[in-house]
Amino acid sequence: MSSGRILIVDDEPQIRRVLRATLTDQGYEVDDARSGDDALEMMRESRFDLVLLDMNMPGLGGLETCRAIRHGSEVAIIMLTVHNLEKEKVAALDAGADDYVTKPFSMPELLARVRAALRRVPASPEGGPESVRLHDLEINLMTRRVISKGQEIRLTPKEFDLLRYLLANPNVPIAHGRLLQAVWGPDYGDQVEYLRVFVNQLRKKIEPDPSKPRYLLTEPHFGYRFLLPEKA
Image (cartoon, rainbow, N blue to C red; front, side, top):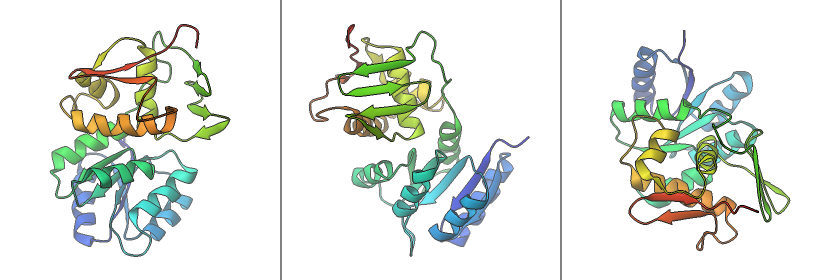
């Protein structure tokens, strides 16, 4: 049985061949596209579980392709970046990616990121609320919808999984490692900087003032806490 269907989007034939061979060997069904336009056409015709998307491609670039995919699909997206710069990671997440991997990368690292992107936190976290209202913010954990000031806010699947886990454990500090392993899986645990980027993106989307967070609070040198007032 297939572990999932993956679309590789990269303008370099050698990278497509290597990725295709490796992922196929791991039990995934794999297709590939050499451009953003080809990828969008393939996605209109077929269903995929994950897209591996090169950020720097001629023509329709990776960020534009990511935005176009995310506009109509909740498919998991991992961006492949060439620079280990935070601004590129933030740009990838802003465009709707769930994750990013910096070239050159090791195959074990990439496979871990693929498993994490395809992993889904259970729909109804034990003991967690079904919906939360915080002033102008409404979060429906069953329908995966977030409304802020009457406007729907689009979260990537992993951003929503992170938010849902925090809401299922409100008002208590949660360690970095626990958050990473609960949301991304057992291959994670030490990537504190990685988690920080995701938390910052989530704050931009749900906080009235992201520079002075009201809900998603930092516990210095430990982790994060979601402040959920008793009478929100």
